Length: 132
Image 1 (spheres, rainbow, N blue to C red):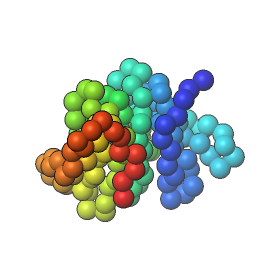
Image 2: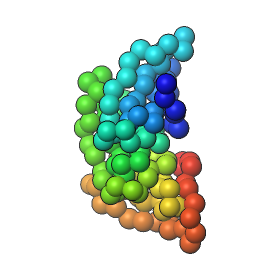
Image 3: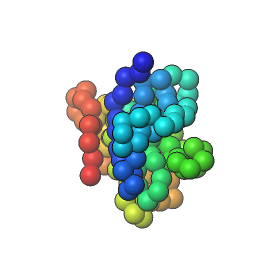
């Protein structure tokens, strides 16, 4: 048994969900779990998922955003925000620019070269649940 906080679909209709156990689950259109694989460190919750251009982007409690090849289940890129900076939302454009929303309300833009710029910081405790 596992709790889920994030879900997304790829272009073929496959569903991906992020688990409280640090695993990502793959579901077919019959709601059957086809596969799961470990991404987070230990049991760190996968809190945000986004599927863009054939890649799955995952972020979680471990403070990392990871780009995953869904065929090999291997992490191709990792952006570290530091443990405790819980990732709650991810959006990626076709040019490789990334918006990352964190639990503390900070929104960070990461350009295709990996440079981070905080574009918003909350004046109070609050989560960023969605980005577009």
